[in-house]
Length: 428
Image (spheres, rainbow, N blue to C red):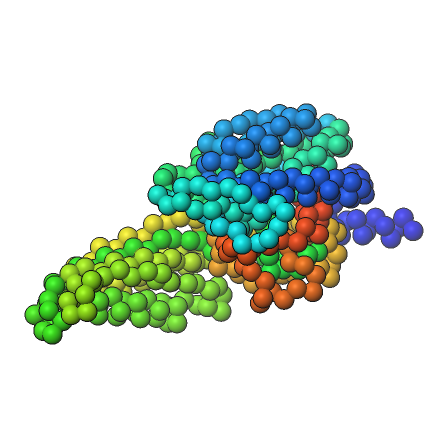
């Protein structure tokens, strides 16, 4: 029998010394399920916008200190970093959860419905955890409790990164993961892991992908200046409205004629157009704003180049002046192929092979990518839709009806804890 067991352990790539911690992780994760749910409900009822997560940060810091974890507060404005040193030497493994909510007014009828409001970009708004960051925080608080209970058996150090402002802020040039990196949180880290709850993936499922997984996101701003004229005599002016329509159609040829969509998708969306005030006046100016989504630096450079060429040349052909700005926000979330391959058995062990999904690229973006630019990282999706739910009818992220089934929280605690012990067991 021993001859059979040893090869199986070698195939998984995980040493027996760390694999044997999995049953203890399972037991502890099940025991604290109700606490994780309670934490999440409290956080959901009291959401806070980016760089304003004061109550959230205090709740996290108090919990980590109660577990004997070394705590640093006010990292990247409101972030919290916890250090758990294991009883044996080994690598440093970082686990990340984002803390901030969105300027969205909740419509769900829940006993723990959001009660907070705030001023965002000069407007009064409701505040809601409409992207599930409350679940990420609660799950990582749970993982901290699980791992601290077996501190003496850990072969290395765990760094818990509770990050503010993942959704970005309008009043700072640098925030969130990018600012945490700038402040040095990744300098002593060997690998970083994170997860994102998915409202349209069934509870009990885990999704992952090697290589580019989530898109880079960039802001697009185009200002066209023509010559104002009477709408009845357009030949006497330069029409920025017609020019803007030509630019919008021209931008779509990037996706249909320049990007190799068999490898990775791309998106160029113009989300708003402002120009004109009256039905019979050709305006002097038109402003457009939009978003760009790409996968990987090479594709991003290609799309930016083609946007610049198309916008500039169409404007010139119409005798209009153009001001084009492309603002890089988050780079593409790229799961390190070697690390992903190494941790695939961990995903299977946590959820079961039948519940692990190899995903297609997602055009949403995540600033977890800044951590991955420093050290190898793996970012996964965790199912949050009720069993048997229809993803086409389930409210998506960033909407007032966004809802998460709490039945998948224990799996989240389990897989985050498995990441730590399995990675530590593989490092020699």
